[in-house]
Image (tube, rainbow, N blue to C red; front, side, top):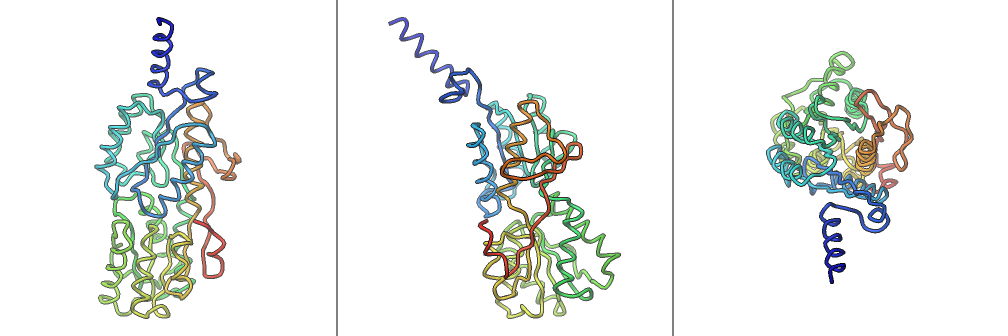
Amino acid sequence: MKKTVVLALAVVLCAGAGWAKGGAAKSGAKVPTVVVMPKLVGIPYFNASQKGAEQAGKDLGINVIYTGPATADAAEQVRMLEDLISKGVDAICVAPNDAAALTPVLQKAKTAGIKILDWDTSADQSVVDLSVHQIDDKQYGEHIWDLLVQEMGDTGDYAILTGGLSAANLNTWIDHGMAYAKTKYPGLNLVTDKVPTDEKQQVAYSKTLDLITAYPNLKGIIGVSTPTPIGAAQAVQEKGLKDTIAVVGTALPTDSGPYLEDGSLRVTTLWDPAKLGYLTVVLANNLLKGQTPTNGQDVPNVGKITVNGKIVVMGPPTDFTKANYKNFSF
């Protein structure tokens, strides 16, 4: 009887400590828990990155918690992170809605011994162990403007739709693109400040209708954040202006398809978000094992990465057009 009680107690203690099932438990190794937090859950882009993150967890035999707010809300991210810190997770990978707003809670996590990574969007670089970027930000911003000019020409009125005004990654791409356009494309005329859409297709659709009304000579729209070009294209399609207004931006090929087909969306450019989720989990797990990434490292299921200090760049983007979008499954 005594032996049975002792054995039962041992099993409970092991489970409570988060020990692994199967082989890992036998070796006495604690299975690490990696949190991956997007700006928000429920949109196709972050659904795709979730699949990649969770697949990496399965491949590596670790626990992955993919969780985030239902809307792009920094305060809700802070609340959720506080709760995760109290649960004793091992690594936190976050795409901040507002980098400055998350600094105190990330510092708290770091003090508690939790590894901190940002992904998709930069956090305060003083608190992160690694910053996982999809692409080279400057090259990407400039490339988006090149695509606009390719479709509308290098003169005329254009507008910029973005996700959230405090999203560091979106602001960085836009800033690089606008600086580039000042010297490379001086004939472009930005009709108004960048227009926020709260990362929602319906808001992008509505704001595009407003822009069409307010600026009758509009020739181009850049949509930055994955739902935004789709909403803009929806409005252009509805108004029958696909030959007059060129919409380009950052969107998933599967979402873009119906609008690429009729030209209401000319071209989009992105990377595989599933690979980004996968890479983030791999890097977090490696950090927990004391392994830092190296420049040119070939990451299984991702490819070769570029590393410069804390910054890890996954690779160049892919442009999606009517001719090739069906070749992609995300």
